[in-house]
Image (cartoon, rainbow, N blue to C red; front, side):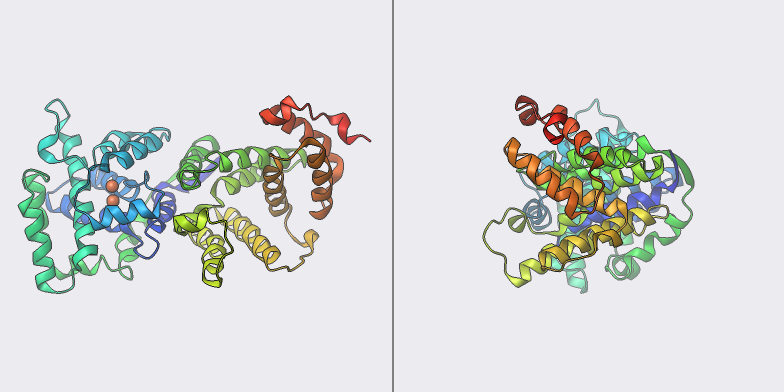
Length: 406
Ligand SMILES: [Fe+2]
Ligand SMILES: [Fe+2]
């Protein structure tokens, strides 16, 4: 189906998930976008180039899912493995038609100005170096502060010391000039930063976006979350496929089937704000750690709720997480009071968790889960067939529809 969306708004909202990777040092991507755009404006770049800078800069660190890697990025000026997240980010962007044009630039967003090969296009070099310079200004701001005059002077001095080796002289000169304006630094405060983007987002064109294109954007963000869950890199994509299949079995409208699929791809965005160590922790969690984990649904809803046209997705994701949190606290909810989309999402999640089980246990549990979620058991045989062909383990163990007929 076709969705009427403002791509500036979609990118701004979803890039908040990337900003979460900083945990307490959030909004890195947006500060980089603000710095880069101000430098580009000083150089007189036209609006279409400024738009590209804004979008690219917000997404520039999409190759970073780990809170540990983020910490390294903002606490050092340069490091040996910087190219790793550049390559990952470029490959993610390459798969999304709307962002494909950014991939090559993001691949070079930590390349020193004097290290570029001569054959690389001049404009592309300048875009990449602008992102790099803005990124390092924000890293220095995080390291030294940028409130007092001497702190700002420290940042200017370090940047100038590394030009032209790391940064293009004309970009540095523009930065030094605009950095004498107080408002340049005020806008980088998390309180003021959203106001910097407001008009730009409001003036964004509403575009007709096909579901397949939207799904590619959602898949990109699902991939970023999956990269954090290193023990199961395909979790979200598998869940989305299963949830969509179940939604179709229940004859949901095409629009609602797509909603369920997008929810499954995006429900875990808040996980990017959970410290790496908690994602894989197997020991009992402290109260503080439980609170961190439970908050992820709220954080996902805050992101998705900002997108006009995503109201149902944000609501479904929020209700899903609320139900999970209630279950964890031992609260028994009335399943029939929940929207079918929420129950499907929960059911798909439960089935996914059953994958490693033995066949007999799987059959028993699947029936119990259907009953627990107050879903119509008529779909059980179809799910069994689906799993049979989908999961290599199950295929090899021949779980067939007849197993559920008895
Ligand atoms: Fe980076
Ligand atoms: Fe960065």
